[in-house]
Length: 256
View 1 (cartoon, one colour):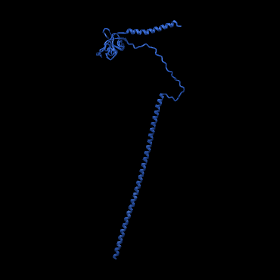
View 2 (spheres, one colour):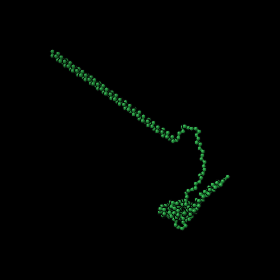
View 3 (cartoon, one colour):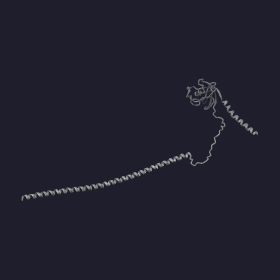
View 4 (tube, one colour):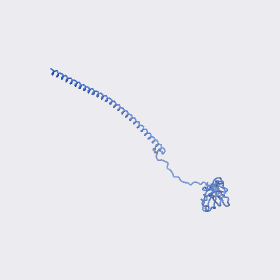
């Protein structure tokens, strides 16, 4: 059963709801202005306004008599339903029956360039909204339980790390292999150089020995040739002597 305390609580809730919904509507109705709107001529582009800011035809700005500078106003054209949000930077208009002066771009968006003057509704633009309860939505159920544990599973971040470490190890191995190959080639080159040096030394020694032997053989041949020449000369002398002796003997015999 409902008690007086519960009823009082319900009444207070209803009153608070009514106040939160009614006050903005009243304030909006109070700040709403209806009247004629005009727009700046394009020839005064770049002129300084009452706020000190220069007018730009392409900006969404306006002039108002009472609202502070920087206030955002929502201007609606009831004839075609178009709306535009402008910012107050100037004072005016001071013509009877007009409530706002718009920039050229704002007037173009409201569709009042050809008319020049149009009836509009001006209100303060408030971008704050009453917070509402968000819509409820259901999240899908996730099965996070694992039936078995696999020790071979490696996280993605660790895979990249292992890959980098493996690449570094492979690089080190290739570097060491290249270094060993270079050292092996160097040792082989040194051994080959020593072997070639030894072969050259041996060839030089053999050449010297052969040269000595050749010289010795040449000396023996020269000696033999000189001996033969001496023998020939001696034989020739002997023959001449024999011939002389024979001639002398023959002469003696003839004289007798």
